[in-house]
Image (tube, rainbow, N blue to C red; front, side, top):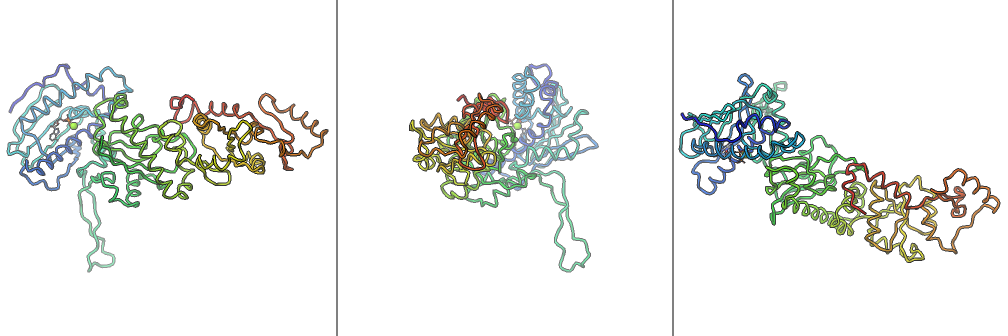
Amino acid sequence: MSSGTINVSVENIFPLIKKFLYSDHEIFLRELISNATDATLKLKHLTNIGEAKVEYGNPMIEVKIDKDKKQLHIIDQGIGMTAEEVEKYINEIAFSGAEEFLEKYKDKNADDAGIIGHFGLGFYSAFMVANKVEIITKSYKDEPAAHWTCDGSPKYTLEEADKTERGTEIILHISEDDTEFLEESRIRELLVKYNKFMPVPIKFGTRTETLPKPEDAKEDDPAPTKEVDNIINNPNPAWTKQPADLKDEDYKKFYRELYPMQFEEPLFNIHLNVDYPFNLTGILYFPKLTNDLNIQKDRIQLYQNQVFVTDNVEGIVPEFLTMLRGVIDSPDIPLNVSRSYLQADGAVKKISSYITRKVADKLKSLFNDNREDFEGKWDDIKIVIEYGMLTEDKFFDKAQEFALYPTVDGDYYTFEELKDAIKDAQTDKDDKLVILYASDKEQQHSYIEAAKNKGYKVLLLNSPIVSHLLQKMESKNENTSFVRVDSDAIDTLIKKEDEPISKLSEEEKEQLKGMLTEIIPSEKFSVQLEAMDSDASPFIITEPEFMRRMKEMQQTGGGGMFGMGAMPDM
Ligand code: ADP
Ligand code: MG
């Protein structure tokens, strides 16, 4: 037996660990299971290359609660450690890593601590929940097992143990404050949250499996049952497979695995799969989206080598894509860093622009391969595309090829097609193309009918961000203006010869005008008595386009899910 003092400059690191990561005690389990997974995969590698001359077999990781002893055990069948390696990796390296980490973050406030919690602290995070930690480990090398004990001070003991099977068992003596981690339901919750797709099977207890009845069983004999290992994870999730090996049904099945409470099927998926210039895999799903910008954002999950990192991908994928669902997995995403570092990281920036490109390519091919189907989906996906066009210039350029402009009658045009279709009828005297649109078919019904009667096409654009987007379209396309069908600017299109004849006499007009101007604020609206030829509408009231847009932009600019910060200057 030997004992020693871990060489630390911070007087006592354990209270620090507790204090600074207070809000996220739960990540200890993710850290310990990651280590168990690493140890298992290292062994796999060493047996593959012939370095370790042992049978790899079908190793699993087991998590066990011993409520009476107030212990939590994490057991693996990986490479294990010799006593010498425990000295080196646990007493020196792991400790210095933890110390460095805490040095960096100890002055951060509690808000940041939540963020830090998403990232790893490593083995010593065990001391967030335990007042004593034991490691019993046997290396794949032919050496005696080792038993390390540390009670939360820099002192530790290291002695020989009689463990015979290869691998490592970590025993946590759970502290009084953290007894929640002795509850089966709490541990199951954590395993599902962080380890659902880890690459090594994780056993947590057993479950009863019903077997088929034997042939000679009587009608009311109970079906036989047997206890089997309860494996809580899927070690081979769909995103780790090749797209060619997956069918549409597999993608849908994986969606249900990711979102068990989500009953609506996704519209389509995008399988991400790059290995150059960085590694990235993942599957993104387009869910059915409503016109509401208040969409829950934490729907894409970020993994690093199948270990859950966070479901807050803000700053990692472009904001408009946070409306999608799915997973992104990259070994190149640095883990032990803060969010602001992550956002500034070069690899992360490349990932972001790669994903944007991939999404645009997929939309383009959906549009090209089956336009009818794409048009059918447009209403459910347009909010993402329009928001993307508004906020990402590169996406804007690509989206020109598939962004659609539906008319009130349900015809869909790309912007180029639209320009072609209306250029004869809707060019004003200054040679400007005037694109008419409605935002509400019911409310603007008579304006729409009037415009259609003149042979104009009227688009139906009703997303909450439409005024911002039109502003951008106009700035990118000189000589076009978008005009709402009930706006006064529509007058510029009216040519002398087809000016409608009012059914009212001059005298009636005067009377009506007098009445109307009394009730309608003239600085905001204008009244026209002769522009309508329908019996139902003896006059129309129009509002200047720029005034209405200003109002709308003030409304959508500040609020909504994206806030003002996301709106580009226009
Ligand atoms: P990291 O995993 O980032 O290296 P940790 O603090 O989590 O840092 O672990 C420190 C080291 O301790 C590991 O690199 C590994 O060498 C060793 N280790 C930890 N857990 C195990 C385990 N279950 N089996 C074998 N080695 C382990
Ligand atoms: Mg680790």
